[in-house]
Image 1 (spheres, rainbow, N blue to C red):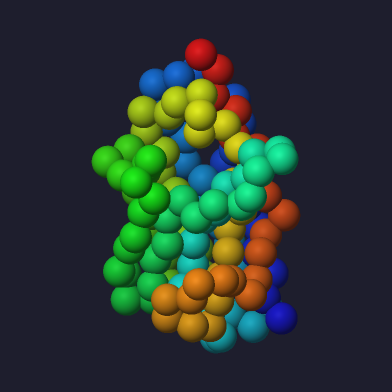
Image 2 (image 1 turned 90 degrees about the vertical axis):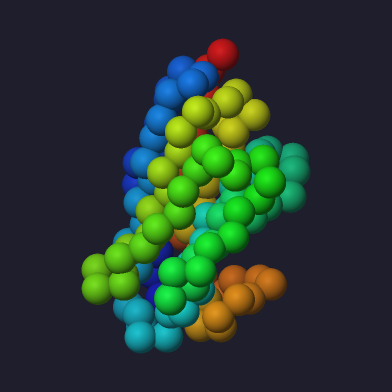
Length: 119
């Protein structure tokens, strides 16, 4: 089993920056792809950014040029650097991990961290 723990959320003004971190523990040898999702109350969870073990990344169009995903395989961590934050970025952000290289869905999830962007 894999456990994921997010940190770094909070309240920030529009235009500001935050850095989310996620640490994996447990059966970490099984982890390949990692990702960040976000969810607004009443809406479906959506993929923000994903990264493979080799470092290949993908982003939702709404965050391209503003957010950067990275990972430290030695420390089993994944990060999301968020710049130019907008009120519409407000959501609970979840870390996800999966043994597949480019999954459609992810097997393992963190508890989430709230990001609130004020206008």
